[in-house]
Image (cartoon, one colour):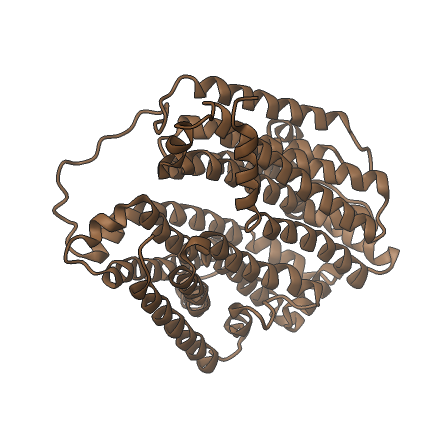
Length: 530
């Protein structure tokens, strides 16, 4: 073990205590929510059997959870949650490694630590140990929660172990990305692309007649463990071996680069920037790359939703337990089930897009800690105007992403089922009506950033995770989709299903957003930088 690794592990664990519990809460809540959901809505064997028949009939449903299912509580519950839990634990491990390696180097803290008795490999080793422990804890808590819910012990242990190794593999991916990238942002993008590719390969394998694709996906290896049925324990060894190999590659690459640099070549910037005239232009120049990446991801997800329109129409036209389940949870009559589906898919996209303004606030904190904000504010540009420029880009970018989601969704849907000119206004109105709720999430993050800057990044993540958790995990557990009263999306009316546009809730959310924004800017103006 490299000198100083133990001290860096303790330091990283101290910092993770504000972040890791939220990931644990999300994992446990989602696993228990699915058990409760199956018990409440499919309490008899006949209902479970009818549900599994629908899943077997449609490739989309098979791919959603990861393969075929059986009419048993343990198989159904973990089939519904497994596809997400593996991704969540992998994402948490990926972000943990990047946070304690490249982000520390970007901030200059690694260089300070290396001036003491800290070996070259110690930061990477500490990050991997902490990420591995976090993944292990997440899987163990998931298994403990399912055991407490009464699920079969052997299958539960296999399922928890599959969750763990998904995190370990992507901790190794992040370690390699941290050596290749020139900064934390690029390392995160590389890791997320790898995670996205793994999910796409797994999804394509379950949706097609090409099951061998699943063997190419690290997430697919966790699915192939097949908890509660075959329990292929040896596949856990495949994931562990892959994680070990990735870590070995990361250590080898670490010795070939200088501190603060990456192995991928850097693209030199322009010598002059005549277009940076004002805070909005500066914010746009800094964040346009992020917005373009979000636009590409949003368009892809919206296109998938539109392409599922014929499938949704076919499924909802046939009476089944799935149709009853959907109409009950959406709170719409059977005649409006298709409109309910379209609204709910746009709502899912809106929950995801609400992360965009939160990330923009986190970037404010990054600009501040890196010292770049000090350099900008040494000019006549005031602190409030500097922040307001970023807020303008965040607010307009959020609207642009929602509009893009609606237009792509509507275009694909209309190309398969209807008239775009007639349906586009409905999709656009439905998506844009969700902007105040997404802005409200960003305003909460801004207030936190102004008042508690040092804790702002984990608290911003917590604000978005809680919003998504309450709206998409806890809400179905209590028998309704579309949010709970403790998060802003709950108050948006389903205008796709013929409900009137809610002027009062929209104006209330806008007023709350304005108050939180003003409070955050005032706190930022009065506090010290850093």
